[in-house]
Length: 111
Image 1 (cartoon, rainbow, N blue to C red):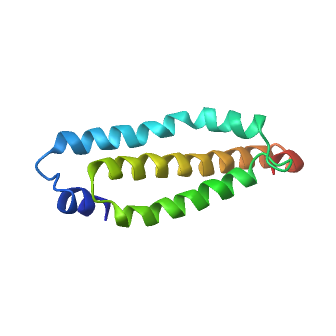
Image 2 (cartoon, rainbow, N blue to C red):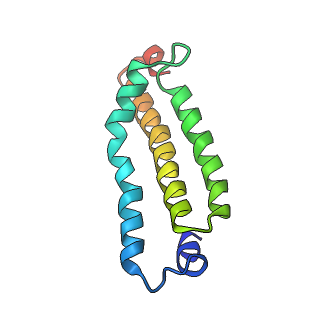
């Protein structure tokens, strides 16, 4: 569905370099996962370091996915893509930390 939006609705089928640039910028936000992990460790929400960030990331991702339906410009595509990747990475980083701590036998620290 995203490729239909990019190619047909935004008219980028003749501009593969723009498509490549978009995906490079979008996926580069995943490289910041260590930063998201540090934030969740340093700033717990209601005493919890993983679950609130997972919930916030998942909720943000769901909202941004709805925003893709309203994208009509390349600028809007960048905004939706970067924001969705950040939300997904925050959720995934929380889940990774949770699983590592549960496997290490620290269920109280895991939440």
